[in-house]
Length: 376
Image (cartoon, rainbow, N blue to C red; front, side, top):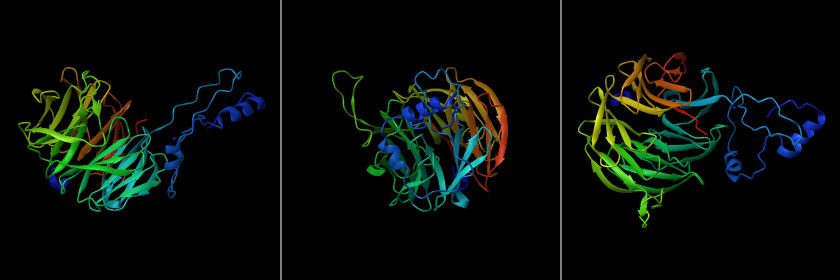
């Protein structure tokens, strides 16, 4: 949110023969599968890094026995330092900055998977697509009025970006990093959420939205309704509804049955049926606006003005625990053992475990707007 509007192949073989076998079979970590996407994303200007992530997968040589298991690669989060025109790469859970790259035009929001890092610069009217492992710039897309929120579809093949001023949603194909389509949804298009099955996209029209627009990717329904024909690159508007309060952030639950909509004017989060848009129950939260993320059967809800984060059972809606957060910690992400919040006002990244035990708070920049943990 904006304050002015509410707001990582190394393995030691047992012998020289084993080493040769490893190199012959795996090419020092290569899988043996030709991956044009990986080659394409290796392009671009290099960026200074303070350390290199260990990304390659070590292969086992036939007959070499069972080598000692290697530790998993460090987890990464990407944080926007918008006033410094930078994206920071932060190791989790240490909070150490291991890389950074310049993204001009006031980068505000980011979305990340193992294949793509999307950074949106509202002031510059641009969307930057980067390699999340090298931070090389792949492509910078222009022609936006006021791009704001990026989201990557569950299949990882498409990204969507809302544009407040233009009132539309742009679809970007991540196979060639080009704009595929634009659909008009209404002025103020802001936060958006995908259903896990990729059939629906809900969009809040504004940071304080009285209306939610529903997009569908289904273009035909055959006799077996469980197998509709979808075109994820070309969604279309199928309806809209009023949640009964001013909405801010929204997100589908992992099973796709509910959409949790945070508020811009109340201290509750509304939980709605994704099928009929009916309000199911409310979850008490801190002062608005709140943001939400899901992981491991829990919802994590932040209140930046309330300086808190809470863990909520998705199954029951019951608040399990609360923890303090740096003032201004609005945006968050939660993947696996990590829960992180970025403070717009303090410029920090607060790192928690899944039970909301705060591990550390790292000062990163004068202001940190958004954070995204790289998923694989």
